[in-house]
Image (cartoon, rainbow, N blue to C red; front, side, top):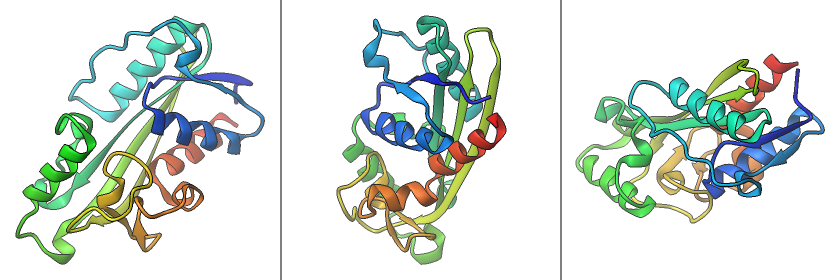
Length: 194
């Protein structure tokens, strides 16, 4: 069942914007930000799995707010780097610019099809009574030689999405929401909740 009201288990402004918009595709859902509540302290993200991290965030927010809570965890998996940065994508460096610079440096000398990558996302909806529903989504692409565009957040300017024919950094929010890993995970979650 799709809850009539939920809270987003993130303080990342980019994720709040994307997830709130994507949840509207489920029907009339009142989506609240954690900014509407007293501060919530999340457990540190682990290195075990996207699912574990998404569920931990959702459970923590549901317990703190008394509302169903939507958590997510996502990462960029680069084939030439053995799937790195993967689950550690947000901790690959201190800032988004530093993360992109480190990634591009690690791919120095890697060309063309060998720069294949994907964004992966797991979303988890937790109710205060302990119920959990999860879903995942991926978006295939490749890493560009340099950042292109300033839209989105995180690694978006260096990720060329195959289904779009452009980077997430140049894509409009509407275009990105049709093919992104987060959009696909949310669509699957919505179907499971129905």
